[in-house]
Image (cartoon, rainbow, N blue to C red; front, side, top):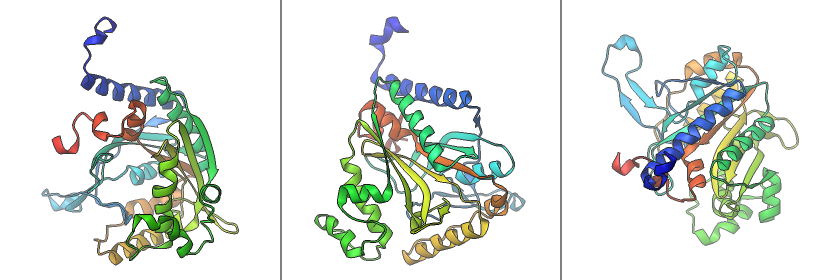
Length: 324
């Protein structure tokens, strides 16, 4: 193969880059004793997150098979947690996920997600492993980057001079005035998210991994909330340059609290005129058996884009959505 390297087309190089990354990921976790698993792509439950839309598909088989309406997964999170509750231990899945409406230069409705869980770990420990994996991936293409780890509150204070935990909404809106954002229906957390995506994230240097941890409790998603003044959500987000690559949690295993969060999501969906999503009752039924653990999801195409030095997701796909 080396003798014919000059004959390798850019298209084949694209496919080889993905294959090499997959090999690295599997070796990375094999060396650490983390089990690769595979879970269903179609589910009777959907993702209640009001910022994510799911694809659905009708099932025409026998009614004994269960729900006739199925949803393509937006992540493998719920079934992986059910495996953890059954005692599988440290595990990961590398596979396709689907998000409706997310198409463009940097998004594809079908993409690859890596998600893994570490039993007995906190989000801070998992944060370090996520950094190590990204550094190993970048080493495949001869890239090295610096790493900056900062608390959510501190990065807002340092970069924007705002206290995200106490500032009024009007204070949060001021730096976003040039973007002429329609404020109707936007909550305090929406404005905080917009400050990240419009002000902080674009300024992250391309040769840097930036990790933000310990979010406001109102942005806990599926993470535990650590008591304190103020209480904080034990979650982190990892960025490579301006791209968000990974989102991790010290996982919540309180079924009652998780149900309440799902129901709040659906209430928000109703407010936005969106369809309510079926709650994953099978997850809730076993969630309190899930061991103390931390989990993280990482977008593989985003990582490949950074490795290839491109801002176009089509450059790292065999066939983008428009040609699928």
